[in-house]
Length: 114
Length: 114
Image (cartoon, rainbow over all chains, first blue to last red; front, side, top):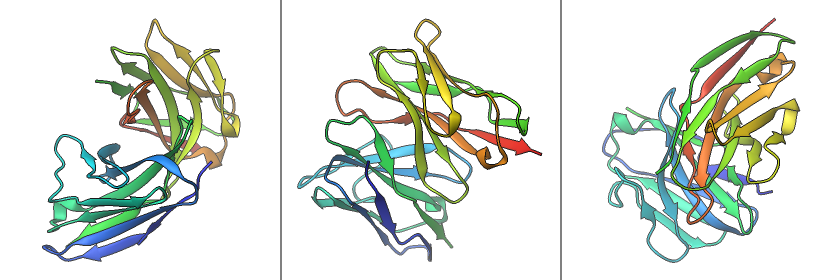
């Protein structure tokens, strides 16, 4: 299994600012993903974080708004840029171990934009 | 592309009663199926998964699920629930090949009443 931690656990930010969320895994994972969970809703995949190259974004999500880095196999960051109240959500990262079909999730970062 | 439909948004059940949470999926390719649980203010925890083989899979906390290919369903069951099972439950599907990104259903809120 893998244990995933995220920082910060929550934050309240002002409109127009940016927040960077960190995700740390205790094992080397082949795949890392970032999800958004809007209030009372399900999870939507934002992007796949690729080690050493640009992330792969899902439809409706763009790099300028959600830049992602993954410098090594155990760490990734997601930045929410130029925030608006519509960005208020829980952001979760996940990782999948090599030769495993299970994704492990971090506890999430609860973001409120005022 | 895959999609997941969880047929019940909320399921209230009395303690020690049985419960079934329904999940149907749609996909043109072979899939893997998962159930995750999200307790209040926490991340997602994997309950069980179906990859291949026996269509009845057992998971943690006394839950089990049955894969029915002809009905494209993967319903979650527990014979006797406890107050501590109160949580949000998500069904998810991924392709068995390729990036294996998870697609989630809308979630079912299970409420256990004493």
